[in-house]
Length: 330
Image (cartoon, rainbow, N blue to C red; front, side, top):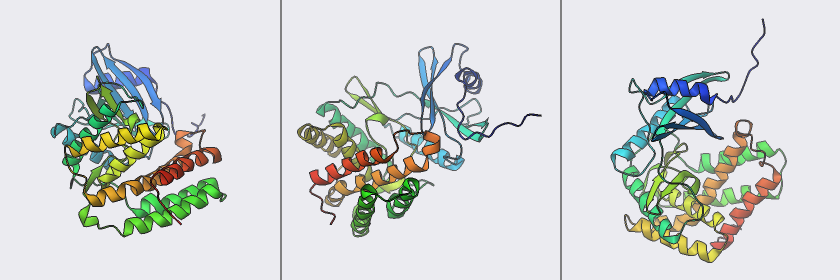
């Protein structure tokens, strides 16, 4: 008898997955399923006539069922609050999470509504204004809304992240030494803020052009809340500004779009002085965390770019942001 060889991250057949989705959600036999992206999680586009969906299959042991349930609870809360987000679709038995046995073990699947429009890194200052407005509406609904998920703090953003990065690269180099020094600086900065004056609640933590669709230059829809958790709402603002900075190398163009984004946000709700003071620093902590996530998930994501040169590019972006914001970490 031949033994089955163990797997760590299998890819499901779109044809067979199509049959499961049709059955679980009572879609028509004209439904077509196709691979969209095989990355941190696996995404499939599901087309049923005029109706379009996204089916996400979480990688094995990436998220617990409770973590996924909490992500979906947040999305349904946002949907009920009339914010523009991609939301989960219930199956025939009113269940949102499908359990699928893969060669590597149990994996979870969720069907989401498809966000209208398209993603682009090259949007106008006017669109940046609208993104700010829509994010502020999300934050109005998520302030003080807590999840049974990670609470982002110095330990998991910085201390643990540096350990993961060092463990992955094995050797110390100038980039890792820089990240260690930066981590010490940021921990002191975050520890000394007056947390009572900073809004907190559920946050997305990955707001950038790749996780939002723009429809007709006037409608913004957020999706991919896979990294949602508890934290300061200004973390989302800071992270978006950093990503805007890295995708707009012309600093004058960045400045115009950043100011437009912040103005849009503050037409809905104020960013208080303590939060504004934190904006240049929060994204540095988040990016350190995401470097560690790439290291931790290397075998599943198979990111061939994750090497010394990739680390140097990422740290280079952090250094450019530090110079732009006149931050002194010595």
